[in-house]
Amino acid sequence: MTAAATPNPKRLSFEPGHRRKFLVVVDDTPECDRAVYYASRRAAGTSGGLVLLGVLELEGVNQQWLGVADLMRAEAQEQMQARLQKFAARARQVAGIAAEEVIREGSKAAAIFSLIAEDRDLAILVLAAGTGSEGPGPLVTSLVTGHAARFPVPVTIVPGALSDEELDALA
Image 1 (spheres, rainbow, N blue to C red):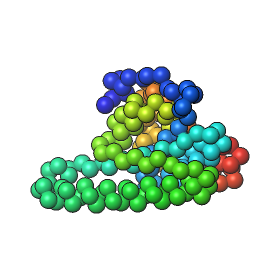
Image 2: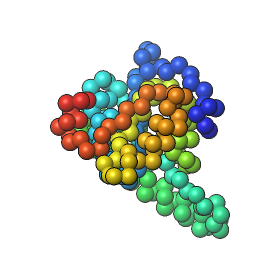
Image 3: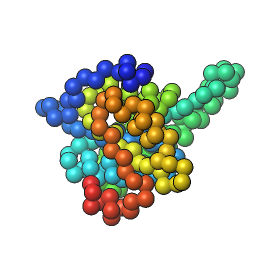
C-alpha cells in the first residue's frame, strides 16, 4: 500500500476507551534502542501505549522451493520475535510499560502504512537517526523525503547519539 492510497481516518487516541500509542519499527540497527527508549518514556509519561513493529523483508523467499521457503520464513519469524521480545523487555525496564508486538511481512513502508490504517490509536511514529557518516538511515530517508507530505501521523526522529539521560530530559 502506498502513501497516496492509504486513507487517513481520524485518530481515536483521545476518544473514551482509547489511548495514544507510539509506534517504533524494530530492526537490528544500533540506534533502534534509542527509538524504543524514547518512545517508551514518552508513552509512560503520557499514559500511552507502545507498539513495536518488526518487518520481515523476505525478498526472493517465494522463489525458493516450498520447503526451503517455509524454513526461511520460520527462521526469520523466530529471529524477529526474539528481537521484539528483547525490546519489549527494554520498554518494561526503562518505563514499566508492556509493549504490543506486531510482525508483518513485506516492505517497511507498506507495513507501517497498513498498521497505522488498522490501529487508529497509533498517533506518533518514532524513528531513530543513524549516527554514521552514511546519513540518518534508509527508513528515515525514505519516509521523510518520499512520504512526508502525505504521512498519516507525525514522525518523531530521535538522534541516535543521545544518551539515556539526554532522552529522559526530552521525554
